[in-house]
Amino acid sequence: MKLLKDIIYGVRIEEVVGSTNIAIEYVAYDSRKVGKFTMFVALKGTQVDGHEFIDKAIALGAVSIVCEELPAEIKEGVTYVKAVNSSTALGIIAANFHDHPSEGIKLIGVTGTNGKTTSVTLLYDLFRLFGEKVGLISTVVNKIHNEEVESTHTTPNVLDLNELLSRMVERGCKYCFMEVSSHAVHQHRVHGVKFSGAVFTNISRDHLDYHGTFDAYIAAKKGFFDMLPADAFALVNADQTHAETMVQDTKAKVHTYSVTSPSEFKTKVIENSFQGLHLMIDNMDTHMKLIGDFNAYNATVAYAVAVLLKKDKLEVLAALTRLEPPAGRFQQYASETGITAIVDYAHTPDALENVLKTIKNIRKGNEMVITVVGCGGDRDKGKRPVMAEIATRLSDQVVLTSDNPRTEDPDLIIEDMKEGVAAENTPKVLAITSRREAINTACALAHGGDILLIAGKGHEDYQILGTEKVHFDDYEIVTETLKKLNK
Ligand SMILES: CC(=O)N[C@H]1[C@@H](OP(=O)(O)OP(=O)(O)OC[C@H]2O[C@@H](n3ccc(=O)[nH]c3=O)[C@H](O)[C@@H]2O)O[C@H](CO)[C@@H](O)[C@@H]1O[C@H](C)C(=O)N[C@@H](C)C(=O)N[C@H](CCC(=O)O)C(=O)O
Ligand SMILES: Nc1ncnc2c1ncn2[C@@H]1O[C@H](COP(=O)(O)OP(=O)(O)OP(=O)(O)O)[C@@H](O)[C@H]1O
Ligand SMILES: N[C@H](CCC[C@H](N)C(=O)O)C(=O)O
Ligand SMILES: [Mg+2]
Image (cartoon, rainbow, N blue to C red):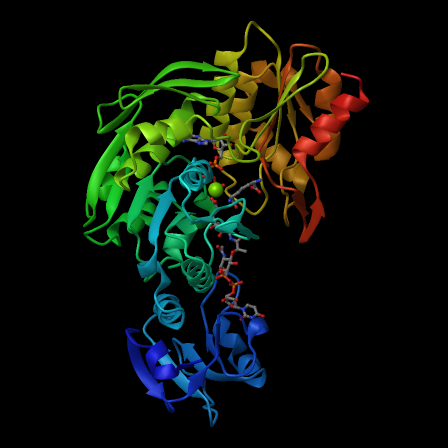
């Protein structure tokens, strides 16, 4: 329980109607979660305006409303706080309500189109090997030391984020490694949160459905570095053209890492095979179980962050060699007859190109590469033809299929993808709407030595059809099918 006046301390307020000396037991931004003595924060969303639910929230027991526009009818016994911006207000309110948890933990945020989950998971695992109590906030799972908490977003809403962080602090976690998506920065999901460090992995085409233009997408990511305090570090990938833009206005201390350009934390790829990576990180020889040149970047992020957090360089390298990739990232299965199936979360053009190039680089001879790929519905339409072009250019056979169609017609998504297939590559293409059938067909087409890439859904154990979520697991299906076919 806290007093309203303490909870709204620091919020940019235009007007308050009612008493600020009332007790608040709960804060909610969704009317469906309101109970007695709740403060309801009305947010203007992309689908609906939270202000429409103010009456409903009061009926359910809200005693305070934070909003950008006061409702026509002011109810007695309810305190209305008219804020300049409800989303940023929620950030301040969440921090006050949960006693500023981000100040009690070393919080490191990773942003970029690809590599966020891999980097934060490597860091979480690395620091666990050091015997530290650690938190993790990621697309796959959230963790409060060893307790798993379901992840619904790459970056949770600022209220849920502060709650997670406060549970980490309570549990004695010293560090938290979290993903910061561009949606999160744009929607103020990290507003008022204190970061000790921030990492930029890379930026390439994605989420233009949401941000509109590539420049707006870059600006959203840059916004994360703009909000860092002076005592934080900003670690950026010097091989990326947009690295300088990211940190041009940051107050944080800038550090660089790279694989090709000169930088402070430089890694060289010595060898890349199905067994893993042989790297020279910071002039020291090391082997990793991760596969693909792109993972050299993720490994370097883990190394550099650990060193910036004052861990011993040699101990960090020794621990890195023991780490496994997260679920659904280049996850391999070798069948009885020598077919290699790879399940990978490549759901952007850049990721798909990297994974397919890696496969082509590390295969022993001229084994066939058969790719099963789709694109998500209600997401960036522009990436569909680009991903199909990449898949057909870099594979011998492609089965275009559904990813998570969501509320779109899956056949129309496949039609959008087909637009990108060059005429000479059309003979390589099959289109099968059912992802299960597409995987079955790819398995039937494969013979000993061939490589099957099932791209786009990685760790996801569901498929979203319309608004329904049904169980679906690429790895489970591809391994069971190959076994059933005695392959
Ligand atoms: C486009 C988008 O990002 N939307 C997120 C946003 O929703 P919104 O603001 O548009 O919400 P809305 O549905 O318009 O509702 C507005 C307000 O009314 C409230 N409401 C609504 C209905 C009701 O009955 N009562 C009520 O109070 C809602 O709780 C909300 O506060 O805020 C919600 C609460 O925090 C999120 O759940 C929701 O994520 C949606 C489900 C989503 O799919 N988001 C994806 C695109 C996303 O965020 N992805 C990123 C990046 C992925 C990556 O690259 O890794 C992520 O961080 O996960
Ligand atoms: N550093 C990297 N550079 C380019 N591609 C990468 C990199 N790391 C991983 N990938 C590719 O991107 C896919 C997604 O990786 P990962 O889950 O780590 O990224 P993410 O940024 O968390 O994605 P999301 O935006 O969905 O949260 C991987 O399966 C792989 O194909
Ligand atoms: N975090 C990303 C994940 C995409 C994964 C892909 N399987 C899809 O559903 O499009 C998004 O929400 O855009
Ligand atoms: Mg992620």
